[in-house]
Image 1 (cartoon, rainbow, N blue to C red):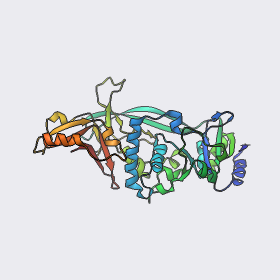
Image 2: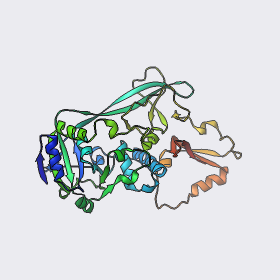
Image 3: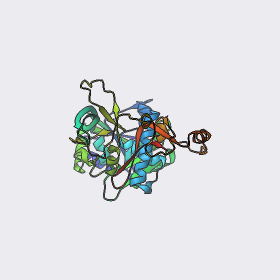
Image 4: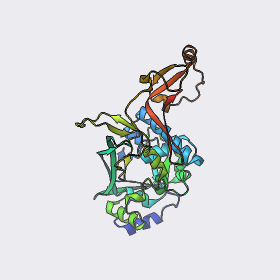
Length: 354
């Protein structure tokens, strides 16, 4: 691996011109090392896994892929790609075929803050919404641009071109960032054989190079909902009621079903009828289900019953059969809402199965 220091955007351009045109790039504002060598690891290795949230993210990501990009399929790789690029974690390292995109990330520092917005539901009842507002801002300091050998990386850990996630007439985040994935990596770093070069420079150098290539603002790499139907679908999921420590006024406080970072203002004064605010009401508390002529029973199940999967398990449920024999009908009600999207920007919301 070459160690290269540059002092201008022009010098950076000359260095990049000498690299293999099949190289992949990754930009970072921080440098991490292990045993004296660069350490590039997955977001799971950095921050760990929360199984319950992972199940939710995976199920919603699969639905979005099925709706907007059926050509990509719902494979683990493409599901993980959405997790990685829209705010969760994955077993992969994200990179780009564009040196300019990676230079932008090598010069802009990520930050986020929690906001609480006061608005109204469709019945004009007040609600408070907790959001994660994120931003990338230029900050003085040193940046780091890694170049990877695509052919070697493909042999050692695997690479995936996310071009299959392109959507006609739209610009999802993976397209805007010319995104690729390295991996999956199993609790290890990207192997040293995959590195071609480690380029260091003042962040202003990387910023200037990215700007020369047309990357001057966050919207170029993180398109808003009007351009990105995947983001629009994820932000259209139900809201769930939470207990907020600073809620002194007694209004219901809600958080998104997927607590993803937002780069654009999404405030609306009055929410549409398609926006669901779930406060925990249960069908079981009604005594019976409207239209159920047999009476039957309602069984409470955890939300994993809606989001989890059990591949290879026979679809045979003797206990359910016993309940049906005794009560003639059984409804399984989850502790949360589940939503699926369609290409017509409609959402179907459910609580369980009957």
